[in-house]
Image (cartoon, rainbow, N blue to C red; front, side):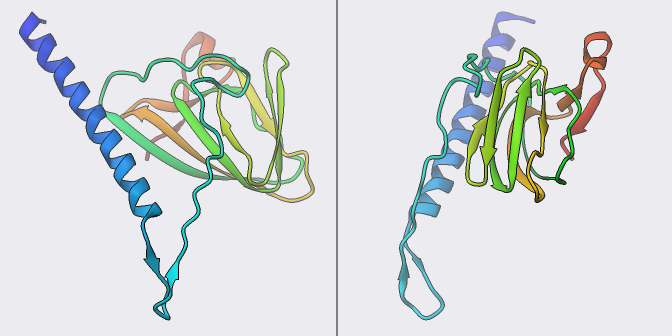
Length: 171
């Protein structure tokens, strides 16, 4: 790739990231702006930061965003009581909020975090872990993945060590 082509590629990536940032900021402003209820009374919007960090829940630093065509995926996942998810990794940065129930997340290294409804979480990237619903009701979590078009967002372990097999890909 020529220097000029590489420079154009870098410029396009920066432009895409700027547009994504502007869209996220603009969306936040729309959410924070005044709204009106059906009866004409203004509604007060509350904004609460659940979690903000450059680190995953276990304290490890998040990697740089991958290059490629960006693709954001939002999943609503329901895990019945007593169900344990298989060991897996996320090759992309993702964060979520448990909206119902409780969920215990355990890394392969043994670190644990217990989530309850309303808790936010920044997931580990490329580190094996699993979750288990250790409650008496279904656990529901909404997760946002900042990925690359056509690449998996979740890979089951230990198959990932031999040859990656995507479990969840962007629709």
